[in-house]
Length: 316
Ligand code: NAD
Ligand code: UDP
Image (cartoon, rainbow, N blue to C red; front, top):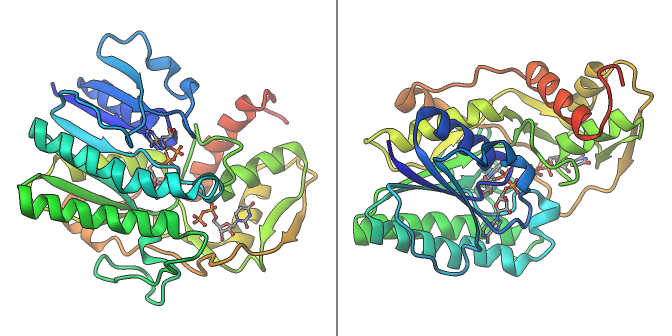
C-alpha cells in the first residue's frame, strides 16, 4: 500500500484516478484548488479512511509525505484555461517546480500530465512522440500549450539534474462521466445541448478532427505508465479513432434519438488545431496498452451521466 498524492484530484480525470487508486488499496491525498474541480466529483470517496481531501493551490509550495505524485492540476478546457491565462502558465511552471521539488524531497516518483496540445496545429499526422510540434507561442492557446511544453522540459531537467523518477504522459482528448457540463469542451457541449433540445454548436466548418478516449481507458494507461520501471516518457495515451466534429455531432444525435436538436455553425476559435490523432505504438509496445472502449459505448455511458446531472429521466 502506497500513499499517493493526486493534484487536481477533484477534477474530471483526477476523480477517476483517486477512485481507482483507492480500489487498488492505496491511500490517496487529493489536492485541489477547486478552480475547475468540484467537490461532488469526490463526494463518494469522502468517508473512506484512506482518502483525504485538501484545498490547496500548487502555485504555493506545500510539504507533504507521499510515495508517488500524480500531477493533474491544471485547467484543461480552452474556455477555462483562457479565463486567466497568466494563472494557467503559473500552474504549469511555478506549480510544476513546486511538485518536482516535493518529489525530490520525498524521493517520490512523479507522473506529470502533459497533452497532445504540445503538438499544436500539427503538420505530422498521426502524432508520434518524436514530433516537436507547431505551436503559436503568442496565441490564445499558448498559455496552456507553452506552459505544458515548459513543464515537460522541467520534468526532464529535474530527472537529469537531480535523479527524480519522472513519467510524462501526453493525453489526447478524453471524455466521460464527471466532465463538468459547463466546461465548454466539445463532448460536454454537444451532449448537454442535445439533451436540452438546443442546437449543437459546430465551430468552423466542422471538418477539424479529434480522437476521443474514454476516461477508464485513459486512467488505466496512466497507472501503467506510472508503475513501470523502464521509461520516463513522454508516452501518448489516446484513442486513435479519429472523427470530424460533424461526425461527432451525428454520433451524439444518433445516441439521443428523441432530441429535436439540429446543428448550427459558429466562428472557429483562433489557432484551433485542424487535426489530431495519436500514434500509440509506444504505449502498445511499452505498456501493452490500447483502448478498449469505442466512441458509441463511451458516449452512451457519458450521456447517462449527463441525464442524471441535468435531472432528466432515461427517456429524455
Ligand atoms: P479538469 O479541469 O476537470 O481538472 C483539473 C483539476 O485541476 C481541477 O480539479 C482544478 O480545480 C485543478 N486545478 C487547476 N489549477 C490548479 C492549481 N493551480 N492548484 C491546484 N489545483 C488546480 O481537467 P481534466 O480533464 O481532468 O484534466 C486533468 C489533467 O489532464 C490536466 O493537467 C490536463 O491538462 C490534462 N489533460 C486532459 C485532457 C482531457 O481531454 N481531459 C487532455 C490532455 C491533457
Ligand atoms: N468545438 C465545437 N463546438 C463546441 C466546442 C468545441 O465545434 O461547442 C470544437 C473546437 O473548435 C475543436 C474541437 O471541437 O475543434 C475540440 O474542442 P475542445 O474544446 O473539446 O478541445 P481541444 O480544442 O482542446 O482539443
